[in-house]
Image (cartoon, rainbow, N blue to C red):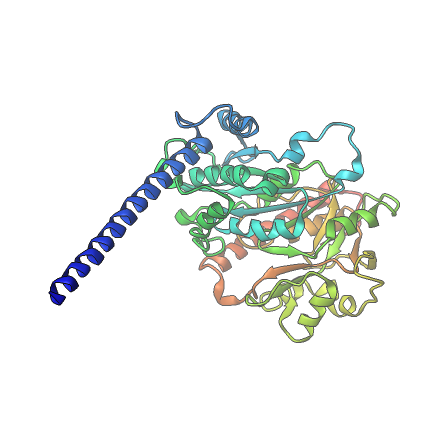
Length: 431
């Protein structure tokens, strides 16, 4: 009798457990179907199709139509005819709403940068620090053209700060075209918020080693710099690589400084450039930077690869220069350009363009610094502003053809310098 009661109780417990397990399976099945439906809706919302509600987000539908129109133009060819350029592929709200005759003080300084899709993940931290207008030129090749188009559109769709401040431009080979990615459902169905888009970008992180793009395709860095520069209407522009970080509050500090100065079109404001160990947190202020510099966690940019290329900045003078306060940006000292200095600087939008014949590694920035010198520019160094590159640059990390590219561009640089004599016949400056 007692044994019978125990068996009966066991059956009840077992039945209850089976019912709970069955309910959990039903619930998980429901969640899976709901998530799938939500994913399909998100995809439709992004790229169109029957699942999209046309009037649900009129501002986002408008963004989608602007992208369609940008792509339908087929872009334009660069001067060499080797590349196809989709300028303003996606415009920020800041650019879209900018009206002629608006207050110029609201648009003093913009940041311009360039990248391939494998380094675009840096955009998140860069914009978090910058928080002002930013122009990004992206080079894509092969399947990455479609991938880049979809991902930058998804970034502008899901990320409010990117939507507000970032303009995207796309460059591919002249024989390639970008298209609206509405048929690639499986590849992009997981995009549902800003974090998921950056997670997808992480999967392409470090796909190429520096300039080693598949198929021996040349990375047109100076073309990209010019496109990013030309994508902004600001009075001054800072052009950097996307894996560099400016000091905090640079935009506001520079605006305050420049509005107090007499306008001068023949000067560019130098930001000393550094590189930091990968594990270290990016410094925000000069005080933080100097502390890391003194213990060897930060060092001058390119110190191991080409110390002469940055030495004219005079790092010891800058590190020891008096600072009246972190918010008081001013000129610490002024330098004359010397070979082979290649400074990063904030310059007026009228400065000469980068020479687009330089591609891949070597002489792409120094050629432009050389031209600034011949054209008569001065190089004042800012007291508390700086740039930091993520990670130390070391010899072994470069792609196999670096030395070959550098040799070829050295020959091109000699020809470039001869051309400056004709371009600036009244200048007695040489480089």
